[in-house]
Image (cartoon, rainbow over all chains, first blue to last red; front, side):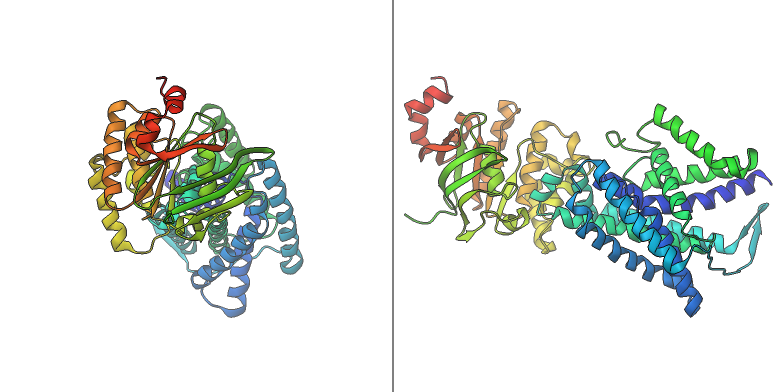
Length: 286
Length: 238
């Protein structure tokens, strides 16, 4: 396999990774909650997309926004009803809570959907250009991932709700003095993260098979990407995601795919030592 | 006696087992600058935090223009027209001066008037216009105070409460800010100023309250308070 092909594979994988990590990073940065549910949200998004596609034949590109909205509602409810009760508690408390919620969601999915790997197979053929061969569905997946990431960036940067999210992250008491209802913003942030996870799952299901067993893998990836890229921002997730995608792609060829994940974690450890804020992270959010 | 804009009576509040405010009663006049002075730890900041809803009172009443706001949430207090410019400015890091100011108008939907108010703030403090796209926390202390006051004005309040206007600022800057506040007050906005610097506060305000260990001990027109022997001795070293 040529250099260009490996790089292209890495970039495609990297944009999907960015999409996977972005919600996790947002919740961690704004709420200071390590959301153990994140991986299962992605799987749920993938499964819902698959079953909607398999039973109706509607294009997954149309199903995706519906799934994303469903995950938004689920995320808002979970945060408002459960996590907000302990959101100011030490991080271990919220971690335990989301871990428990994750066990429930994970097992419900296994019972109702079974753990069979499922994939939305679109078969759009391949494109060959510049010595790179790429399935079209992967390119569509990459395009969707970039659009989603870009949309979130715009919302956070320019909207009123985006300003409120940053304000709550920086100083929740001062934010309250602006008339911002902090619990509502927490729930909205969590909901946006769930929405992005659901959308990422939908995109993922169009490219790779999804199964409940992947929930832990997704969570691990999100964690590594946040550490590599830096917390709380869209740019951190994008840089971290691309970096991990490219690293894994090259490592897969050089040391074998079974060792690629290990290389990713080694680089994360190395970065934790030399640059704890991540590649583009803000100081103070290590 | 005519009803004041903000009427507080029998207010008690504190943190956990510690009671800080004991039976506070005071009245803030409509259209005036009122000051609350007292030494460090007297309960001035706690009083503002209780008014703005960050702390729930244990007893007593806070009436804003006739509406009871004791125990209301911060967004409801803001909705009633009371804004709290907190001690230490508390600007949002990572957001520009303009975004910080716009956050002051978070609850407002009247975009046209919001833009007009943004213009008013930037005309009052021209440096904020110059620095409008700069991260607000990179401003100097005085400029940050201007931004914090501007952010308060952006909520279109009826009462602007400022905690420690002069803390950590050079006398020259305090003068600039005092002039600006007088100008803002001239537009009809009532101001409640909390200050450790008794001279500045009494100079700026028309009415004053002295708080000691959580109780209002002296009340009166600020010109009289400035002549009061107890105040001169305790706070001015005269």
